[in-house]
Structures are given as structure tokens and as C-alpha cells.
Amino acid sequence: MKNMSLATQIFIALILAIASGFLLQGNAAIANEYIKPFGTIFLNLLKFIVVPIVLFSIMSGIITLKDIRKVGVIGAKTVIYYLATTFFAIAIGIAGGWLFHDIFPVLSTSDIAYQAKATPSFMSVIVNIFPSNFLAPISSASMLQVIVMALLMGFSIILVGKEDSPAERIIHSFNEVFMKCMELILKLSPYGVFCLLCPVVAVNGPAVIGSLAMVLLAAYLCYAAHMFIVYSLILRIFGVMNPLDFFRGHMPAMIFSFSSASSVGTLPINMSGCRRMGASKEVTSFVLPLGATINMDGTAIYQGVCAIFIASCYGIDLSLGQMATIAATATLASIGTAGVPGAGMVMLAMVLLSVGLPVDGIALVAGVDRIFDMGRTVVNITGDAVCALLVSKSERR
Image (cartoon, rainbow, N blue to C red; front, side):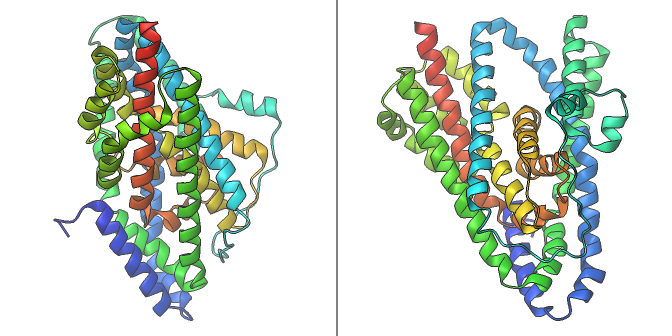
């Protein structure tokens, strides 16, 4: 087990959970009473870490981003591009999930109480984004309010203007502490997945297997749509280069990222590929490392598809307001959680909490997260490369 990657361990846990669930069919009460409580412990730990991870990682990132002022317009163009494409990605993910939602199964979840909340008005949603109490957003896990808190406090620390101030050191230190805490919790993922999924399979049987295949198909179709439509249009409209030439030149980085599922690990190959396709050294050395940290188009698509999949499994119809909240939360939180190991799972928990969906649904997709991760990493590094070429072209003009 020590020599296995976490993804391999989770996948083994998925297989064991399915097998054990089939064996316990007809005795689901045993699974719910003696196995599921340990899965609930894992979920509680995941809920515990989401808020501090978002709060301190966004603040730490903002404090670090003060260096962007040194590169002026390049930094502004890069951040605007990343936020815009991430929003398009989550929109595609939600649309793809909605198109497939009639095919997704409704699982038996009688052990989880859930009542759909009344849809709030647009203006009340805007008002509720801004916190009125420092501790309330943290205790209630109101993710949009936590993000606003992090933005305000991060910018305030920068405006104080003191280099290496105690506040900066404290924020960076707490960020490192909670990152390490996140790593410790994620090491329990195989056990958490087994203990959460086994009772679900025991109750629902073969319906779970078909649901995983459908959600993977939906996610990969959305990945392909974002890359070959959105990125191709950006390349064509802004006159950067022929999309076919781009994908041909970018293919080595795409293949490596798919096999490694690591944006950071693909960085050297991505940088050399962008240089060969005409991106300047100065822009490439700034845009691509920043993109590996904050650009998460593929993960945003994953959030949209999985949120609607989990809602469908619980028989919940999301309103337009809830879908808008998912889009806003995933877009804003992408900057704060990109560097977290297992960022997809953390962000998914955050998105589910933002619209009141049961976090237990993570168990349905966590076992195949590695397969999701391979595709979304390809989308992430492809978006970074398009940005490097676009900004280089813009600066030359």
C-alpha cells in the first residue's frame, strides 16, 4: 500500500466497495450501521478543512499576486483570460450535466434527509454574498462569503504596504499548515470511499455501475467541447494561429498530462511546446506557471457535471439560481484551491455546500476521480498554452 499512489488506492477501494456492496445486498442495514459511520467521519473531516483551505489559500495567493504589478498589463490580461475561460468551462459543465440528467439514475437515499430550499431572489443572492459577521461565514460554511472575506483581507494586507509583515507571514504559515492537514485527510480517502460507497451499492445494486459510466461520458464530452470549440474560437478570432496547427504542436504536452494527471509535472513540456509555436520566453515563463496554479477549466467542467449528477442521484432538480451559484462558486474558488492535492474533491465539496446538496454524493465519483483527473488536466494545460500564445500575440501588437 505504501508504494501505491493515492489514486490507485482509491480505485482499489472503489472495486472493493462495489464487491462488498453486492455481497451485502439484502443486508444493507449492516452496511449502514457498521460501515457508513466511518465514511461519515471522513466526510466530517472534509467539511472541516474546506473553509480554512479556501480562506487561507486565497489570501496567500492574493498576497503573492502583488508581484503581478511588476509585469503590469501582462498580469491583468492573464488573470482576466483565466477567469473568463473558467466561467465558460463551468457553464459547459452545467449544460452537459443538464443534457444528461434524465439518463442519470435516482438512487435510494432514504437514510439522508434533504429538503429543497426555496429559490431566493436575484438581489437577495447578491446581498447574501457579502458577510455581516466575521465568524458566521466560517461556522456556516457559506463559501461565497468566505471567498469575499479572503479577497477583502488579502487586498488589505497588500495595501498596508509592509514587505514581509507579520500578517503576511501568519497567512502563509496557516496556509502551509492547512495544506498539510489536507494531505493527511486525503490519505484517508480510500477508507472513506469504501465506507461511503459500500452501503450505497448494498442498497442500490447495479444502478451505481451504470451511473459512473454515464457521468464519465458526460464529463469527457464536455472536456472535448471546451477544448475544440472555446479554445479553437479564441485562437481563430484573435488571429493567434490555426487551431489544427496548435493542437498538432501541443499534442506531446496533452499526451503527457493525460498519463501523469499533473499540470505542474507537464510544465516543462508545455513551455517548450509554446516556445516552438511562437510564444515569447518572457510571457511563457510567467503565464504557464501562474496557469498551473490558478487555471482550472477542466476542474470547473468536472464541478458542473458532478454537481448535477449528484443532484440527479438524490432526485433533486436544481433551480437556475442554484446553477448560477455553482458557476460563481467554482469560478471564484478555482484560484484558491488549484494548488491543493485532490483539488477536485475539495472544490466539489465546496460547490455542493454552496447549493445545499448532500456532500455524501462525493463517494459516488471519488472512486473514479483519477479518470476524471486525466481528462481535466489535459484541459487545464491546454488553456494555459492558449493563454501564453494569446498574450504573446497581444504584446507584440
